[in-house]
Image (cartoon, rainbow, N blue to C red; front, side, top):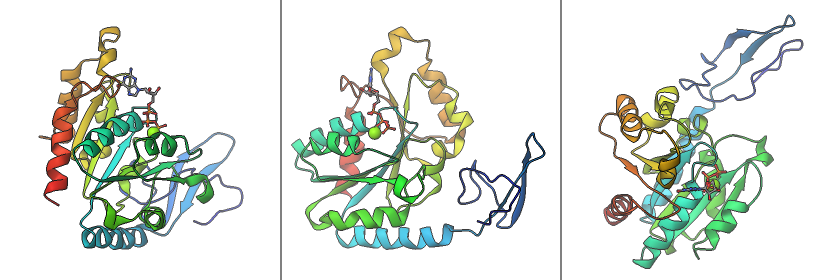
Length: 257
Ligand SMILES: Nc1nc2c(ncn2[C@@H]2O[C@H](COP(=O)(O)OP(=O)(O)OP(=O)(O)O)[C@@H](O)[C@H]2O)c(=O)[nH]1
Ligand SMILES: [Mg+2]
């Protein structure tokens, strides 16, 4: 990125074709802003470097026979709560799990996930400028602290963000998006890339439905509008209700790896 004196630059910059698309990989006139400023971004695509390391990660996972799941959502949709329940259930059936979790700051989620007994590595992106997503090199670095030969399933909880994480391949085999019922049915239409890129959607916090006017059927229809046929499973990570199809889907993938 080149910073041009006298011009504001965009806060989130990375690869093209997503909602943050500042490409083509050259100068781009952004929207006009008040005060005589214009946003101009000049960037080189860093996508190739990320994808190269994603392929390295995938080879490492294949060599060790590990299935890798990338879990994404808006902040607070319930990724960690769902994963604590999921890991406890899977470990009880003999599936060996580990977690890499991304947040800008704190190791709160790693501590919550480590309470399951699974190895949990926290990545804090504030060391790299506060990125709003995990990247393949970041995950590769975290793998130093995980014995891949000793696990069957690696779960990566991405940074809470419904946009950017979907744009970065980290070498995973499958992706799941968690949408909570407090976020509104329209989110799949507003943030279609995330829903298009994922293999499964969990509609979380269904225990709150009696207090909301959230329409589960409308949310599922919106998801299917951007990703026809994707499984959409209503769940409550809090009560554990609805988790059975999700757990079975995951067990099947681990068994087939
Ligand atoms: N009522 C209800 N609350 C839930 C449920 N799942 C999660 N929560 C609550 O929602 C809040 C956020 O949950 P987290 O699991 O931390 O969400 P997250 O997606 O991991 O959040 P970030 O990692 O910060 O993006 C917490 O207060 C949870 O207790 C659920 O199924 N029902
Ligand atoms: Mg979390």
